[in-house]
Amino acid sequence: VALQITLACFAKSWSFWTFVAVAYIVGATANHSLFLAIHELAHNLGAKSASANKIIGMVANLPIVFPYCITFKPYHMAHHRNQGVEGIDTDVPTLFEGYLITKSSFGRVDHMIRKAIFMFFQIFAYALRPMFIKPDLVPLDFWVLCNFFVMAFFDYFMFVTVGWQAVVYFLLSTFFAGSIHPTAGHFIAEHYVMEGDAETYSYYGPLNRLAYNVGYHNEHHDFPNIAWSNLPKVKEIAPEYYDNLPQCKSWPGAILRYIFDDSISPFSRVKRHKKYE
Image (cartoon, rainbow, N blue to C red):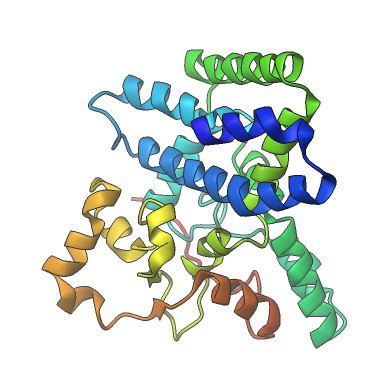
């Protein structure tokens, strides 16, 4: 957070290409790390009380521009409890996305271009999809309003004291963080079916150091209440459960494979129906 605010204060002195390069290389990496800090806090793994986790989450939310740290939690918990269930798990692409990207494509090249465009703008899919699928999941309560007003005040404060360049720097950092960026490869790598019928894949590479070990994704889904710092210990303690599972070797590689492999599309997800007792 401090790094991003400091860089934003210098943004107005940069040339256009310096602005874009810093936003992509540093800003997007930092904001993506903050996405995943908020992910940890959604599991109440940053502090002892739920309220403290929410307050820390609002601090982590500051450079992201849009208030989302409070609304993220209910949708993410629904993903854990109902993974792959259409209409509940908002991580699963909608049929409309599948039609737009795959079903209506005119061939391999067109399909590839559409997937590349989706990857470039995927932050919008992740931000807007929950509001279309389960708009009533998050009640308008004190914490949602608090998150909104804190972000509105911070954005306005940066605008009037530092300049519009600071807010644009934050915006561009957030956009790139969810676009074709090395760390954003985990959005594809985690649950898109790429090997057999496995629906969750772990990544054990160096980018985990910037991403709160979210690459240990099988381990995280098996033990969602274990903090990021201890997920490698889960694999170390029980290698017989994880070593032989299909793995993602590279997050950037996952993005490229999604774009260029014609067999992979928004439909490459394990889907299930919710069972009612």
